[in-house]
Amino acid sequence: MSFAVRDPATGEVLDEVFDAGPDDGIAALDAAVAAQEAWAATPPKERADVLRRAREGMLARIEEFALLITREMGKPLAESRAEVNYAADFLQWFAEEAVRISGEYRMSPGGDFRIVTTRQPVGPCLLISPWNFPLAMIARKVGPALAAGCTAVVKPAEDTPLSCLLLAEVLTGAGLPPGVLTVLPTSRPAPLVERLLADPRLRKLSFTGSTQVGRTLLAQAAGNVLRTSMELGGNAPFLVFADADLDAAIDGALLAKLRNGGQSCVAANRFLVEEAVAEEFAARLADRMSRVRLAPGTDPGAELGPMINSRQLDRVARLVDDAVARGARVLTGGQASGPFFPATVLADVPGSALIHQEEIFGPVAPISVFKGEESALALANDTPFGLVAYLYTGDLGRAVRVSERLEAGMVGLNRGLVSNAAAPFGGVKASGLGREGGFEGISEYLSTKYLALGLT
Ligand code: SIN
Image (tube, rainbow, N blue to C red; front, side, top):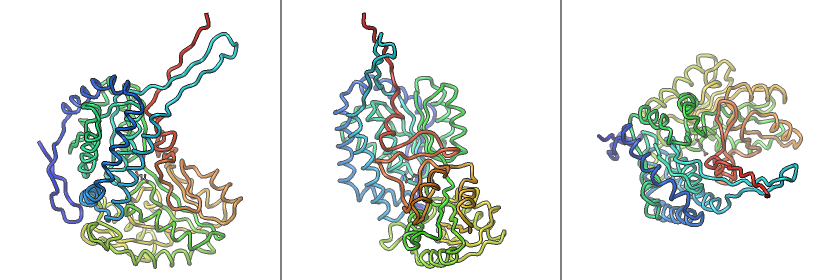
């Protein structure tokens, strides 16, 4: 059985890929279990070397990777190249981390024995990656899993399995032993994933996707008390105080909104602007957004590509229509055209609008006004999500006060981009559990073993 992968800009079939079912999942887990002991025992430097060679192999084929990402996901080629570099950074970062896995030796409080800790790989993992960054998000999981000494079964998103398959090819070319990593594209993820989560040999789940699916997976993972890392939905506030550098805030807003066409869990979802500068901010943002060039990602002039599929397009259109029906004003954009949704700015968006409650995952910037710090914080935190928040202010005291009280795992302070392989990415509240990247990222794939060392 196979399924078709389509170009979201044209609907053209790019490739037919193997359509894995639950039995294929178990076969991949068999292979991961069989390879686990030897991979865990492989010297860290050798594991690191595989990741390093894979990084080089990926960068040597950057144009091929970038074109594949653009063809299957739709983003402009320049953004796809940036994604390949972002993915390569994860492989490099975790190659460097592989050789730094450490433990502790300390005296017990009574001095009668020693407390020794080591860190061991958790074991075979299931890594589930999303369609929006089809290469970088899987590199962010595969990098630490392999560096820690874990084997893995990877399930890429149905819309975008091709870049992940190419990554597996590069890893194999870099010397990854058979069975350590298997990619399972599937058009029917639910039964395959459920079957794997029910198998007690699986020891870890890492998922990036919606909070709704994350909750279902967490419930399934509870059966075998699995280690989980959950990178779920966001509803990022983007706060602009009247004392902010407005030029920087506009640049930051464009980046936080339009990176990846707004199809990102860290995309700014609610622009909250202090009354004194709200009108100017809205007019300037609308002017810049109205000049964003919409075209297929393969067009060299494209700044914004198509939406990934009609489901996402309809969802964005529904959120815009709902906001307008509740009194929001469209300053630019607002109407889909074929598979594209233009960069859109909405002003006077009331708090009751669905667009304030749901993750937009599209290039729409809804703006609302606040008066003073307390009201800004109350609005910003009025959501079950807590992935990232952005804050623009020129006042150092306010920057510290507000950053500390924002309920988010990450804060962009006078900066519209937080993502970096060296930084801990992750949320609080319904945005997830655990961290990816940074020093924290590899810990998600390690478990601490304590040895009570007697002295006699
Ligand atoms: C995401 O949208 O899932 C993550 C994006 C990022 O790493 O910046």
